[in-house]
Amino acid sequence: MKFVIIGGDAAGMSAASRARRLYPDLDITVLEQSFDVSYSACSMPYNIADPDTPMDTLVVRTAQQFIDNHNINLLTGHKATAIHRDARQVAGKTIQGNVFCFEYDKLLIATGAVPTLPDLPGRELLMPLKQLEQGRQIKAAIQNKGVKKACILGMGYIALEMCEALTDLGIHVTMVKPGPLLLPWLPRDMAQIVQDELNKQKVILHLGTKIQRLEPKNRGAAIICDNITLDADLVIGATGVAPCSELARDAALALSVSDAVHVDQYLRTSDPNIFAAGDCGDAIHVVTGQNVWIPLALRANRAGWAVADNLFKENNPLQGVAGTAVFKVFNLAVARSGLTFSQAKDAGFDPVENLITSWSRVKWQPGAAKIYVNMVGDKKTGKLLGAQMVGIDGVAHRINAVAVALHAGMSVAAFIQTDLAYAPPFSPTWDPLLTAAIQLEKKL
Ligand SMILES: Cc1cc2nc3c(=O)[nH]c(=O)nc-3n(C[C@H](O)[C@H](O)[C@H](O)COP(=O)(O)OP(=O)(O)OC[C@H]3O[C@@H](n4cnc5c(N)ncnc54)[C@H](O)[C@@H]3O)c2cc1C
Image 1 (cartoon, protein in one colour):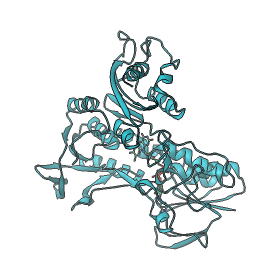
Image 2: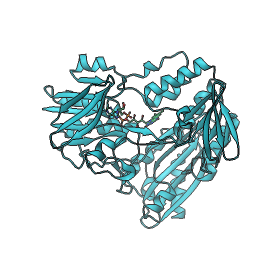
Image 3: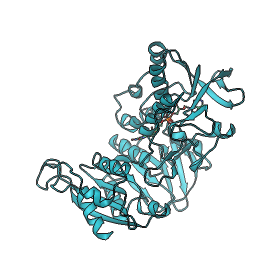
Image 4: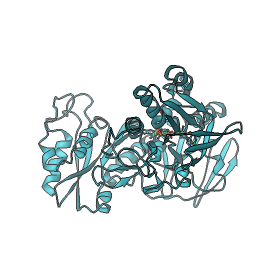
């Protein structure tokens, strides 16, 4: 039996490793267009901030290790260009220009996501951060060009992580986006806390600023906007990503929201011999039951793993995602799980939200800091729909309680009854999440 995988990072290599463990005799081939496999993309901003640690330390396992220790036919520099479903073949081209063709019994598309850079004149001056090689390029540019000023297009989580990394290196950072709001999915009072932190760190924000074009200037570029021209030695393009689903689309597989490859709970596409996992595929949202596209690392690893489980039998159905995420903005952590108020409205709920301010630990404990929790519930059913949190302390892991409650389909009233841990160095007696739920229940 031949199992072919397109894409050799989180989803692809999780599937390959698990398949090898489950099926010692399976013929496994992985096609990876780049020369990097199995690395922590999520750590790239932090590695860029650390000039002494090479980017290659983020590689979890090298291609050679997969070949030698796991008997996986891992082919780097191999780009798949077409899936011929009738013949069950994947065709492609190597970096050297040689064409190849592999037959499969089972195929996994694990091609991830691609940066969506704005279609502007001079866009080639933008440096995106998605693949390890792009991380190396940004790091080399910082070291070789003596970058003093950087401009980041975009203000999402990768943009904000890069902003912190560059600031830590003593680089002056300006951020630009056409939309008028920072983190539009957060209640404005919470977004303002993030904005205040960025101001405190001397980051310049140009919100509501339409970029017209980029032009080469000195060592870097001029960023020409509607009402201002900025210049920078380095311009990072962090304006979002899209699912890398062309292969699936060209093979007439069903696509869904945001053009992600549509999969069922066993990760099967509309062709039962072809699976899709990771950032290229969709998932069911556990709160709405609808298809969503939320490209995050845990789902990619879990879905890859589940593909191996489900390769020949329905063994491991996946429940779905709650969209749980956390990121760091200098001293702050920003987290979310489930739906925001407007997402809940769009999904047909009758949402009510409530924002509370509490303390991360008992107030006089060292490290105690204000924590802001916005919780969303459904007026009709009393169901918990989601929460967003911002704070200096105790945000990152606290959001996981919300995620578990959402997976369990809890009501706000039931969440209030949960027996959360308390000791002064870790939490007030009533955890901020419980306080948020109690206040929300009053509104509901
Ligand atoms: C800077 C950064 C920070 C992040 N931080 C976080 C975080 O903190 N938390 C979190 O949950 N997620 C984070 N993510 C997202 C996370 O990295 C992704 O969700 C995860 O890598 C997805 O894994 P994947 O295997 O689906 O796709 P990818 O990691 O994108 O891998 C897809 C692979 O397929 C290959 N490929 C594509 N097309 C072809 C083809 N035609 N032929 C052969 N090979 C092909 C690509 O070269 C790539 O190696 C971050 C991402 C970045 C870039």
